[in-house]
Amino acid sequence: MAIVPNVFSPENLARRAKSAAFGFLLGRTPLSRVSLTDLNSFEKVIVQFNPQTLDESVQVRYTRNKIRGLPHEPLDYENTGNWIVETEFYVDKGKRSGPIPIISSFQTPETDEFRKFLMSLCYPPKGGRGPGLADSGPPVVLFNWPNTLVFQGVVRDLSFSHVRFDWKDSATTAYRAIVTWEEVRNARLTSEGVRRSGNIRPGTIKRVIELDPAKIITASTLRI
Image (tube, rainbow, N blue to C red; front, side, top):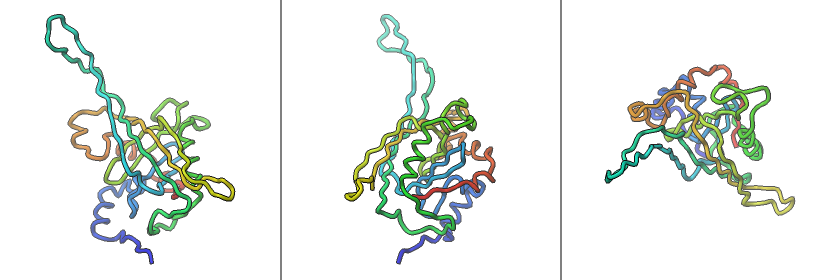
């Protein structure tokens, strides 16, 4: 018999109370899986399995001053690039992601829906979209890996690797989705702010609070 995590334990209650105002949006589910929320449609997807690795990178740009006779090159700061996050999601139609959490809306649709969801993040929505990029741009996504990383960004690169097929009809039964995310910020970052922020990128929570909670809570939630 599957053991359902106790969401009412002191540890879980304390963690959920810390962000009660936006805990639903940030995806603090008993299984603590990665959640992706389309900030245009407010559709929220909880992945089947957390990635095995998480790669983060950022580029700091300087102008090199070449002064004749000087034994070094003085650096003038230009800017800091957007944060880049690389993830790889594994999706398997034949496997469950773990015990069912205590959430009445739990459902297990076809995993093809996750592939279509990721693909939809590469194109602009009909009739414009929410704030964050130009109206002609793809949706901004709230990426939340509980206790690890929270940020808002867009899909920069997306690829799929189909690794298993049904022997009867040749349909894909397992695949890997490799996604490169680029952060979209709505606040100026400072060294002190980043030092204090921990795993939540500065400006992200401000963006969450600005959203309409009613829209978020009633949004469709996809679990695979």
